[in-house]
Length: 118
Image 1: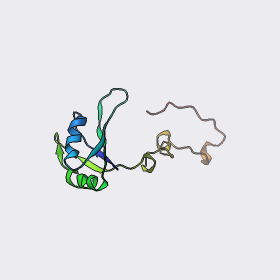
Image 2: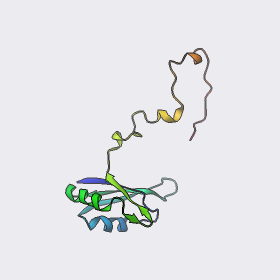
Image 3: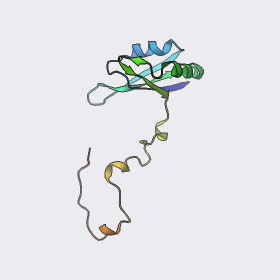
Image 4: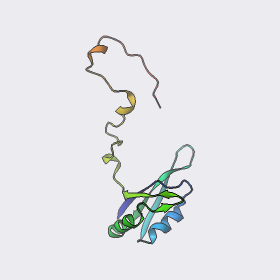
């Protein structure tokens, strides 16, 4: 079993269309196109789970960089969320402007609460 990340998808891509593309290279277990939670619109990437790891590798080699709807697909093995730089462990610090616990210039001054940037 191997999970593949498929990026740079046209927003009009359907699950059956993606399944057909990968089934030419082996058995496909599951296809999930990632959609925006609020709008329900496709976000331009998907995950394809293939039963056989060897077939999945062949699919990556054959389909990576190929054109679908005018866009060059980016396909590679999906990594678990914990391994990605944006994953849970501290990636969120980037957004807050830094903690600054040991910075001398702020000692003794109360910090003003700020609105989040996003």
